[in-house]
Length: 151
Image 1 (cartoon, one colour):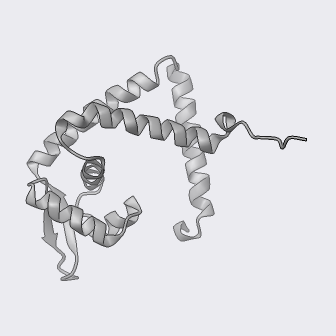
Image 2 (cartoon, rainbow, N blue to C red; image 1 turned 135 degrees about the vertical axis):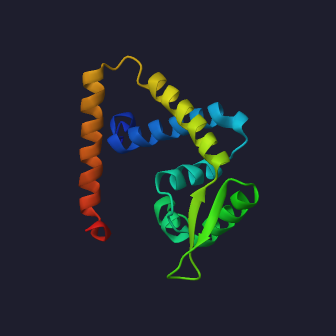
């Protein structure tokens, strides 16, 4: 007898992973002309969301090694995208800030992200969008509660 095979298209985890993968792929296509790699625009985006964060904090958020973040910060600083400021309490730590150039590019990235969201949410009514986001936020909160580190 053949083993039952789950329909992965109906599995929430697989569906969310596929949506995320497809959205990232399309976003990459839409921002290619800006000359940033995915790693670079993600780095800039997270610094924009949390200005003044340290490289260690950014490594935790992006789930990357500290050395990877440090190398990326060095490259982005040399290219004029970020500034690293010393931490008064810890001489080894740097606080990250966007430059004016990066703030302008973040605006362009956000504009393209907004258009992509409009395109992939096409056909879903405003009420259903609100309900969908509320349900996904609840799932996210439930998962955070399961993580002993977030308590």
